[in-house]
Image 1: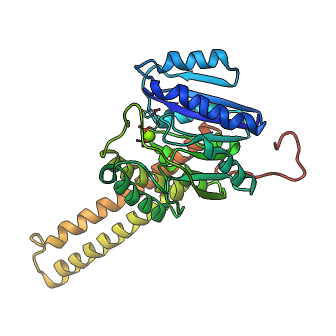
Image 2: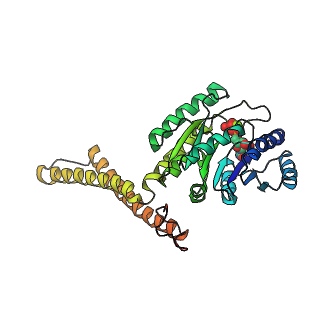
Length: 318
Ligand code: UDP
Ligand code: MG
């Protein structure tokens, strides 16, 4: 299998038929082996029936039905699990992404990239509620994660299969896929893609997602930098806090014992106690984190590294 399309669908009944036609027009002439995986994320409209009809007619189409709405990240994750294509391409079901860009993505992948991300250069969404917050978010995510992209939010992206199979997605982390993938040392490229206004159905997100993105960003940053060594971040802060607190405590003790000043009413005393307790707390958190990391990696048989290939190739290494 060459290509797997993964398409999250939540209440997109009017978009599905035209989307499917469009995809067919683009993919058939390429002459590649492909599959179209629709993930019906608990749609309440007719999307599931429409998808089932498509899948019955066309052996290329597959549909995963969720029991309820689990969100776009979960939908993508389910699609990734099923995908067999060497290249996995994600796109929205709302016709805002243009299947005509797929050959462009594939072309870029042939240049040796592991992830090719779409950039909605001329985005057709409301400015205040969508484009502005997303510009800020993209800037912030690029700064913090060090993976510079103009458009994290664009679903139209292509990945090598190894990349998506390695990723564990939770919450709303689909927005950070390139950043998460960067942990594996992938080569990422970005190309401008078309974007169309939504014709049918409604957008599933509002302005509130901006705040969730900030929290997710903190988490992603932690996952990327410290997930294998939590003691470094918690322990470091804890140690500083503990040492400063201890120093203040010693100073106050000297003042009390040798100069016979009263220290009971000094704010410094509270600060010293606070810093010492905080220091111990943070250190313990770091140690707990280390234990959790071990459980995380060993329990899931995950490795703290990703192998590109082994020479000479043997059956076990592959
Ligand atoms: N989607 C989904 N589950 C959800 C929300 C959205 O599968 O809980 C799908 C939706 O059907 C669409 C894609 O994710 O195919 C992007 O959603 P939307 O177009 O609403 O986002 P926007 O383009 O406004 O950022
Ligand atoms: Mg959309």
